[in-house]
Length: 186
Image 1 (tube, rainbow, N blue to C red):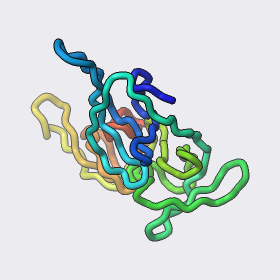
Image 2: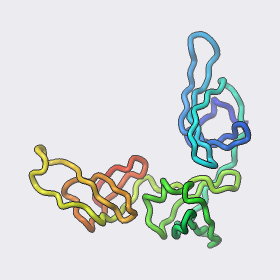
Image 3: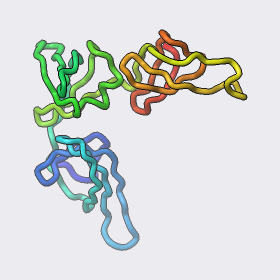
Image 4: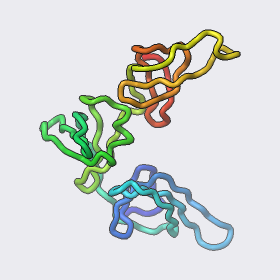
């Protein structure tokens, strides 16, 4: 059993027969009354986020999770096709499960598939990726008073990020996948 004292961001627990991922939590000890844990949980099956409060020390069934190294092959309508790197088996998962993560990686890229109780739950990509700029307006000297400034750029996966004025089409840039921000030239 896992207790509220052992909560970690990213841990998976079962509450009322449904599997949730702990997005964030906070232990609260008021001056009067018992301590409790305020948490934000994401339901694995549909991605809905709920706020839930538990008594301190409340216990839950831990959920078995494992990650598998997979290769993102292509999108097939409402599904995404991944291939296991060791057995070469192909797995189809709903696009909604992987949509947020896969906007940062082009096809034929290695990703990690998070399995929760033997079911695909989430796709994890590196914290920073290098992508080519496919479209951006040219930066004109004098656009800003201080010499800095940003402009929108479309990357090879179709995502739009803000890049410095000196970045041109065809250049590779490094982007933080957690915040969606430009980090540096690649």
